[in-house]
Length: 110
Image (cartoon, rainbow, N blue to C red; front, top):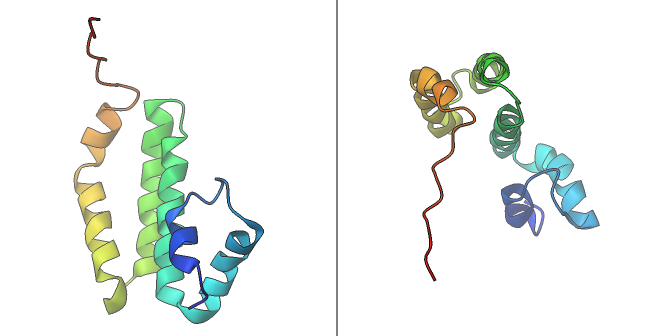
């Protein structure tokens, strides 16, 4: 696997990457297909978070789960990813119901 791959895939794809880190995902496809698939699924999950409404999030979440499932299929190396996707699917309604809600900030007294 190319040097520096671990740190590049842990960062957000649209975040501050060096030129070398920007090239690594395409190199990852050549060296570790399953790792590249897991990385693409992680990045697609970030797409859901950018939805502006709960209805949009629900639509994106459904599309994400269907597409990610087609990528994972029955690949034994991607069993942990499949398990995570099943957990997301199981809690989909709860995820969407919490959309846009944030915990109140604690009142700090000086």
